[in-house]
Length: 118
Image 1 (tube, rainbow, N blue to C red):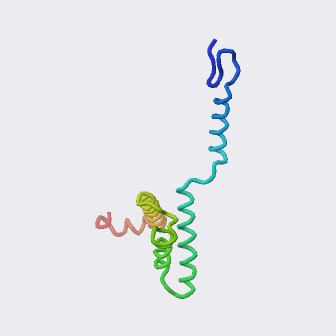
Image 2 (cartoon, rainbow, N blue to C red):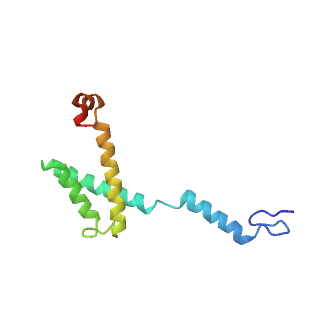
Image 3 (cartoon, one colour):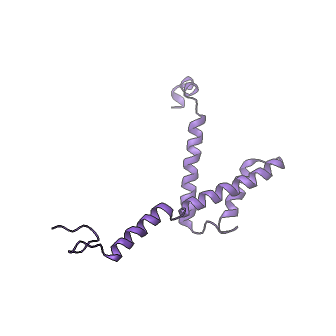
């Protein structure tokens, strides 16, 4: 007779296999946030908070976004540590930027401009 994963020949489940399955389920369902999500939340919160205060002082919002990035980086609070993590965040920021540009793009205006733009 064929045995299932975690069962021995007598049909009883081994303790280590059932613990592995339980550990896998607890990690998947309640293991906490990934490090990328923590970094994204930290960057958005820092940039938003600083941009809010700079908006009150009538300064450009882009300055707040840049200062927020410096704040969470290795120079500031060191929330985002390594070069690889910074590269991941910059790639994600570029994707968000291109998405926002795509939302603002008006296809009818683009077609009016002709082949020069395309």
